[in-house]
Length: 288
Image (cartoon, rainbow, N blue to C red; front, side, top):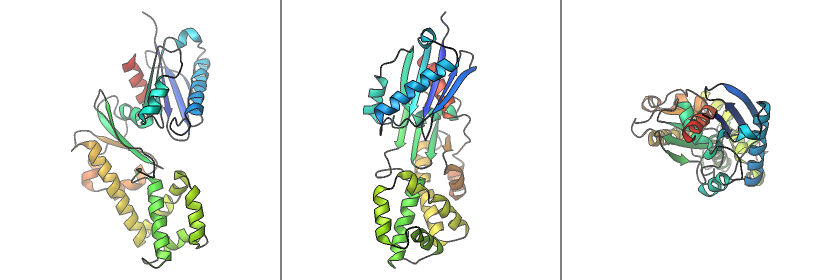
């Protein structure tokens, strides 16, 4: 019987990570590289992933023969877009098997040790997925113009909209809205010019300031986080399916927003049992 090897790729966030194991689950090599978003930069992302796979095999002392015995699962940012997923699935390669998922999908079997369950990633953006043991169902992940509710970028955008309204005396000013407008020299035109070019990460940079204001009982800070918690709660309810699936929350906002969730919603949550790479490796075994 031919020896099999498995590589998991986690291409979510600002880095792409790989992990190579043998049939016993022993880690033989692991590498880290730059981001791999196949929606925004397909060709460069796929070239970066393939280079990282080559580096991973080389780190384990493997060559072309071992590559043909290796089953690869890619969990890539942008993999929820069917058109680019099909393109990535068709990318020329010489592995035993090659399967493409989104980064949030591979997190599901990782978080729940391969058992059915859901994850909600709330960081700069937001997206959730449910794994029923055979297939995935995803929610969100369509970018901050259309989606990403309850995320850091969404929260920052809501806060700056509120700060602009306060500047124009449409709502009351609080220390939070004054501080936010001060970032733009209290000039709406400066804020406007910034907003046209701002990335989701730049919108999200204001999230810590909003949490701090809420801790200080700033009225707008409290209201913003209450609204954020409502959005997150709606996603959790959808993913949980009335308690059918446990939900693990991941991402930079997962811990800070937790106290703002109701006891009912908190009861639907469980700690993540493993990371996205472990989920990719579980899927690689299933696909073998």
